[in-house]
Image 1 (spheres, one colour):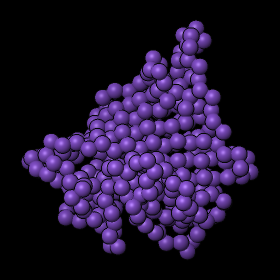
Image 2 (cartoon, rainbow, N blue to C red):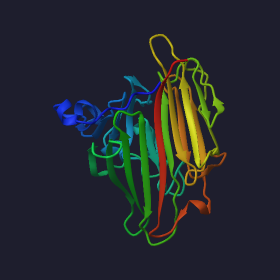
Image 3 (tube, rainbow, N blue to C red):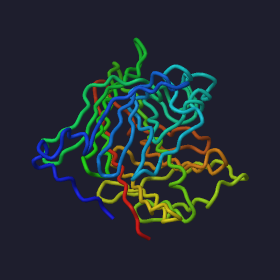
Image 4 (cartoon, helix red, strand yellow):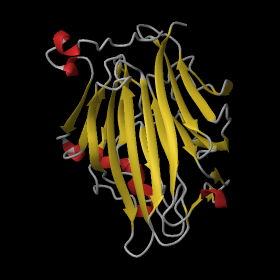
Length: 328
């Protein structure tokens, strides 16, 4: 079931403010450890609403489809930058701050701590510098957008620039995310990256299934399992015309509609699909994690020359997230 597109002709006569149809607003959180975190609140007017956090690299925090939350959230909430440094306690800082739909990992390291790097590198939870944000009603396909830069650098050493652009068509159900990573250091360096998309209840419900390019990968349990242990698998991402399309489908249950969430990513720069299953009570999530490196049995990134980035060079990563309502 799709949402009819918004008719934006004669918009200024039909509305007092275009934001009654679709909007992007800047907000600042005020309570507890989230106090001071700046967010961009997107509402496409088509049933899709989400937050992108300036204070956390413009990562995606909340996500709802027609009022139903789809993103997993951790017990620490969206803590402000510096409250739980990623480098503290060999990864405990990451785990304390880990929350939300997307945590982007890298840029000089991903996965388990090694070589002085913390768990998943130094990028997670780094504040972004917002460059532009707003609503473009004059484009052939009107859209909401935001663009920001995140720097992951050490003076005299590695220096990475991540430029992120988020677009969401007005009246639509899709998020388009484009990242451009530039190596601003003086030498070629490995540049692993991993996108940690976290999906939870009530999207995880009895009867849901996880597929990739039409192949069933996982059927989550109907309820959290006290005996479950976290499990991580990594495989080459199946590609169809250069894209992998992973979907989590949840059937209608009680008063909740059926939902289909599709995460698609370009496999030319993200050739691996890592999946985290953690169905313990208090966690109950699936992590869908496109990556540009394989994973060793010890949980380390397998660095390959294809992940190297020359001095001054850039690489682009493209992902889309689309939601829809299922009738059966």
